[in-house]
Image (tube, rainbow, N blue to C red; front, side):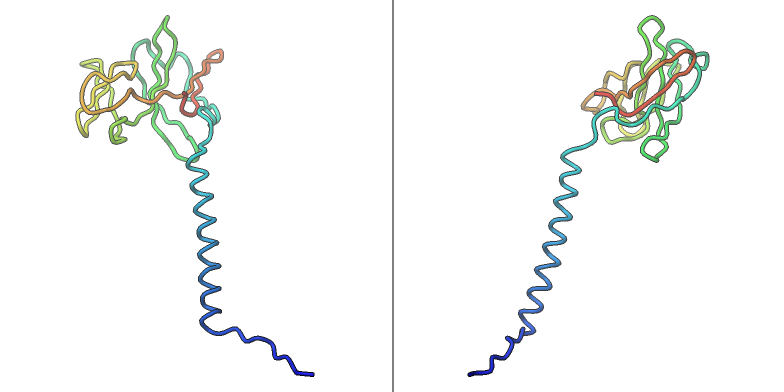
Amino acid sequence: MQDKKPAKLSRRSFLSLGVGTIGAVVGVSYLGLVGDFLNPPPAGAAPLQEVGKVADFAVNTPTLVSYQGDGIEQGVYVVNLGSEGWIAIDFHCTHLQCGINWVDSVGKFMCPCHGGVYDIKGNVLSGPPPRPLHRRVIQVQGDSVQVGGLST
């Protein structure tokens, strides 16, 4: 009978196995991140938060309020359009995400970064923005005005 010695693992094989294992773990992690990116949460999934009372919002005058969405404080313009209802407009320009301002003297939203101009409903009037301002879910229950995540 021959004595069989256990096969030795060479240094090169050990390093190749280790590097391959680490590479596989990193690769699987990236697949998880890609899956999260390609499958975002549904629109409006963020919970509604009270941002004020109905009396706090004058008709046809956008009011900037703070909304705590996904743990981050964000600006949202709440607009009471009177008989047309209510809208909540995201604070960020759709061109490069700069903060927009309501300019009461001209009755328009304006982006100070690149000159984007929007009407009171967030529609593009001029400048480089590729699409209207993003809307947020808004709900008026009794005297309470509540805002949520992005709407579709």
